[in-house]
Length: 292
Image 1 (cartoon, rainbow, N blue to C red):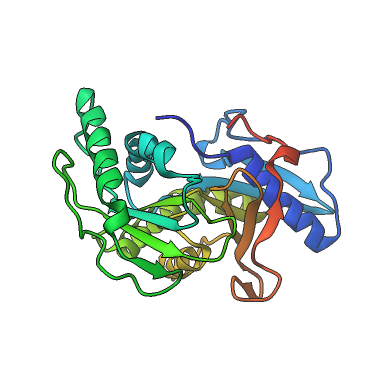
Image 2: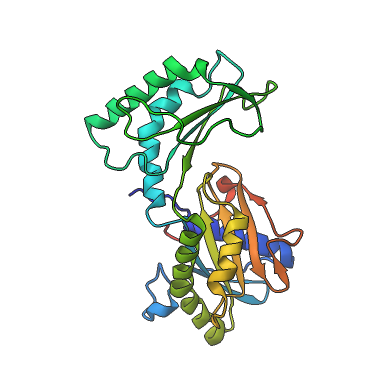
């Protein structure tokens, strides 16, 4: 699977937030114990550097709402690419369209069958889109996410049409996967594993070297993840642990630019405090601090 996370730049984005907050700059001593393959595997955090007079240790991990979600999204992107090319950026109308489909839509599809499903879905939309009701943008949807079926399409789906004043959404098509499983339970399990894997390494630097420890979570999922949900799940995942890091950040990289950096937790501050959320970072100006 193609690497879809941005470890080195995500860490740099967090360091820049810390520098701005502390009004101090990093020294030229930054390095990656993981890249250098430190003999003590429990000390192989992703980055260590000094900001002002304080040593910091950073550990990064990509998160997904549930196991296999990123791979599913990659397969879905391939499956729906011709559909998006055909119906996104329409010049024939000013409506905003949303195509809802199961997150497992592409499961089991390969080879020539993918092309048949793509053609069948495009044909259905061409034949039926104009017969669907048009709702006012933002109103309650007139039917559920699995309202339609089409010959040759092995999953149910729905297409919604919305009327709105002329704007950047006019003529656009958004594709949104639907999840039937208990998404928040799966997210909690995922973050509990993160705590189990990452916290002990950071604790080694905290208690052995006096470092301030920082966990950097990265998400690039626009459909199923938002910082508030991650914060709430993380509070539960780390509850009762004695090795928790000093600070936890979430870097949202689903847009090419800007990225958003939110502090989920640090001393006396949480995600809900003013000034902790949605700091913008331009990835073009960030430094790749690790090999990943």
